[in-house]
Image 1 (cartoon, rainbow, N blue to C red):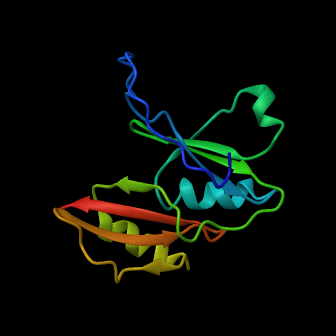
Image 2 (cartoon, rainbow, N blue to C red):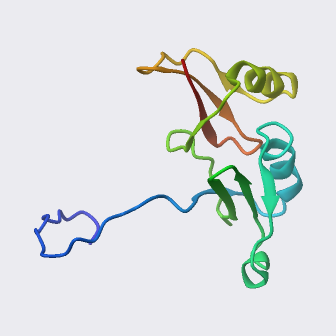
Length: 135
């Protein structure tokens, strides 16, 4: 239904969305080591195993505390420069320093949001990642 509007129809259902299980972003084929270098060594995620059937597709899954990030291979990959996940962190300045020291693009000119300092960093593939720290 591309290009059409859907109406919200009230229902009797009490179904609720409870939480986010994971966020997935795209990456180019064969670049898992570069993904690990950024998401593990810079952002501090831990890699978690993908189910065997899904591992055949490439990509990598990462976890930190209660956050899961999945990187999936997209054959016609284009980096997400606007759409992005935003992660709450506990030491924003340290992460900025690590990312910049490793040569990753950062945008520290982001205005603060109520109660947060924030920065955009770009993974090795050009995907935008927002990091936020409570003030």
